Length: 232
Image 1 (cartoon, one colour):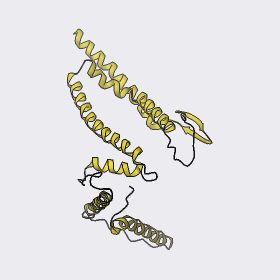
Image 2 (cartoon, rainbow, N blue to C red):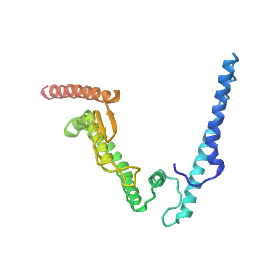
Image 3 (cartoon, helix red, strand yellow):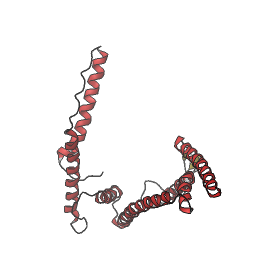
Image 4 (cartoon, one colour):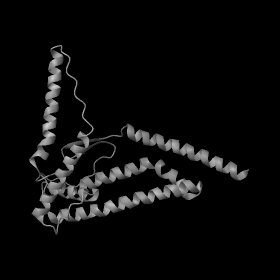
C-alpha cells in the first residue's frame, strides 16, 4: 500500500523482522558448514499474532487519519476500519501513486464502490438461487445449476479475452512510451510492438475441462433417473 505517513515503529517493524530472519538463516547455514547443530528457533507465542495484527491495523489507521488531515474531512470520511473503506482508499492511493489525476481517479473509485455492492449482493442472490434450485430437484432452474459450472471453460475464455482487449485498449497516455491499441493472442504465441507474448492454458484449465465432462455425465444420469421415475 502506498502509505504516506505513520509511526516509524510501525514502518520499521516488518523490515526488522525480515532482517532478523535473514540473520538467523545465515547463522544456521554457517553452523551447518562448520558441522554444528544449529539452535532450534523458538516458537512464536500465540499472543504475538494478535499483537502484530493490531500493529498493522494501527499503522493503517494512523496513515488514513494523516491522509484525512491533509485532504480534509469533506473528501475523506472518518475511519471505521471496514473492508469497503480500506478497499476504496487503497484503490484510490494505488491509482494515484505515479500520476495523481483526481479527474481520472475519482470516477474509477466510484465505479469500484458500485462494483463492491453489486458483487456483495450478487453473491447473496446466487446463493439463494442455488438453494431454491437444489430444493426443486427438477425444472429449468435445477438444470441451470449444472449448466453454469459446466460452461466454466467458456466463461473463462470470454473473461480472459475481455481483459486482454481492455488492457490493450486502455493504456494511459502518460505512460513512458506510446503503443497503439492492441489485442494480445489469447492462446498461442503473439507479438505486440517489439514484445513477444506467450499464452497457453495450464493444468487449471484442464481441470475445468475435466469438470465439464464429469458434470455432463452426471446430468445424463440424472435425466435417465427422472425419466425412469416418470414412467414407473
